[in-house]
Picture (cartoon, rainbow, N blue to C red):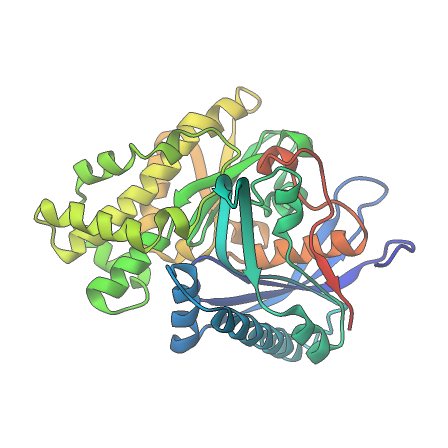
Length: 396
């Protein structure tokens, strides 16, 4: 760990999310704030890499497995480590940039933020895989990995962690800001005008792309609904949406987080069955999935975000990022719904951060903070009892 005078560093952030569709790499220049305040993050370039079909199938199988083997999980972790190393190497070569540090989130295969009985004790846990030693050896630079456990050990949900970047890049003196990430899961960070880091609220609102993607795989044999074109042709089953909104997760108070454990294969099986009882066509099922995602986000805004924002500013802006911003049907629904509530909707592109690079950039920042020995979590977002240094350092 570097304890000398802070200097700007080139950091490669690596993210593979709950959609399990691939890897995003963002090479960033991270600089200490002068003279005080939040670090500065500049995305110098980014690349996205799709998992091949067999690797994605193995990742999804590990996430939703009722039974697997230690050998399978160990092999998958090491295979992912080599994939991450290759993705960073290709990105660095194409951008002609040499990162001094790699910050790798890894692939979440299990996330249980609520304590359940196990061997006589209540246990919470989270597990991200992808062997960091392979990355360090291949690239010959230090690697920060396994960011989430430290927050969970301190009583937090270990999610969301991206709000630290949201605070550094998007806080505004006179405008309320909402940062919405549309990955497999949707999460929102709420930044009231002029807030301190302790004033940030963030939580997972529920599923984003996850349900529609699984429906596409089952109904059409495709990975996703390109541009939301199929959903756009369908009819929304409002009764199904209303029934699903009764789930206890949506009324639970933040901080809270979720994943495939709540909204994975078993949930989609129930969702499709509910739609089919209503005589739904395949396109209606996709349309209803998008409508459900939209409603979970709007419900979260009304229940939790709006009261937190209060009357601090006249202007509220929502910046969206993540793979869901490529689904035109989802984006249109969000734009229409939030515009009716007086919220201006745009994407992080407007602020100079590519929508597919934001989460990778967030982990670049967190890696830099860890390297400096500085906390990277936002306790008001995760519920941790205190700020903690995140991750584990693997030296080259």
